[in-house]
Length: 94
Image (cartoon, rainbow, N blue to C red; front, side, top):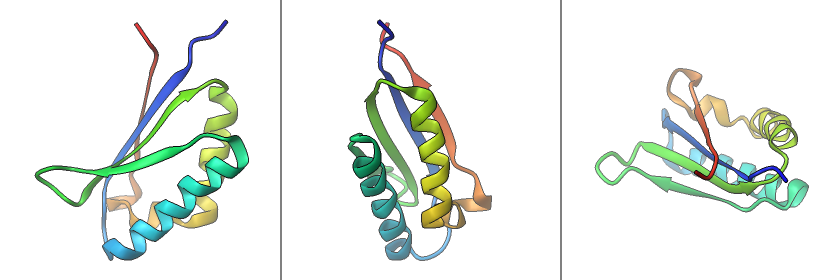
């Protein structure tokens, strides 16, 4: 059995925070509907423009990454990331 993967995607928000929040909320909801993966959004304690999406216990990493890329495009999320950069980190249990 493959261990679940935990995804942490962080970026600095460029532009309107409310519009960015709406786009990311739509992205998270979309992934929940399509894959049954509930994500959450947090912001930096000392920098409210640094945001992180968290998706835990992903059992099919390849499918998740494909759907994530498609959902980012569908909801225009990259336009809210500074320079279009969203940093994805994936972790496995030790």
